Image 1 (cartoon, helix red, strand yellow):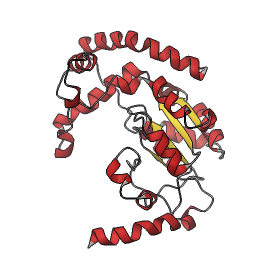
Image 2 (cartoon, helix red, strand yellow; image 1 turned 120 degrees about the vertical axis):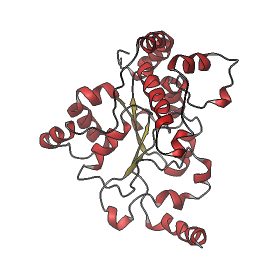
Image 3 (cartoon, helix red, strand yellow; image 1 turned 180 degrees about the horizontal axis):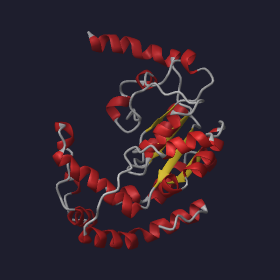
Length: 272
């Protein structure tokens, strides 16, 4: 009965509910949760979904539920008024089919990509999945990566390894140049704001001012920024062992070419 009711109600949301005004499209382990929480506190932004992600464009089963299902995650048009609403799905940047789907469903929407040094991002992602083996939730334990960081990277670099067994893509997710080029094939560059994880941690005020200008909303006050700087949302630093440090150093060389292409396209050097 519940499923029947949902099937009847979801199409109605296509009429009554608002589309997002912008998206945070990535990337995983780069401070997306923090940025989402900061933006939720802006007076001109309204979020009603308890989770930052909808998993609409990256999960085929959700797309099959219909556009109304997607819009059910956003405020209705009366609630929203003149405010902006959004979602933050860190995997949207990565999967190649997603830019076309976003363009199809949401048109020329504004997007934000938060990027991190890909070597550090890979290590942070491994730490997250590795820690799942000790998690109290069974569904997370099934996603655990029990390998060492060195083993995980070696297997991803080995073309003969069973890549279907693991879907973490620690290295591929850090090849930002390829991912952004895919988006630029579907959207004008001025529609996508590129931000740095380092700036999120070290110069939050400038980052938020840049973001507010992009979204055409009022800047956060100094009082608000001071308050936000005291908040922490899943931007965890992990202690590295010497072997992990050695692997990360090797990854700096691996990603150097990808990073140079990224800097050339963006006209910006992140010093990774």
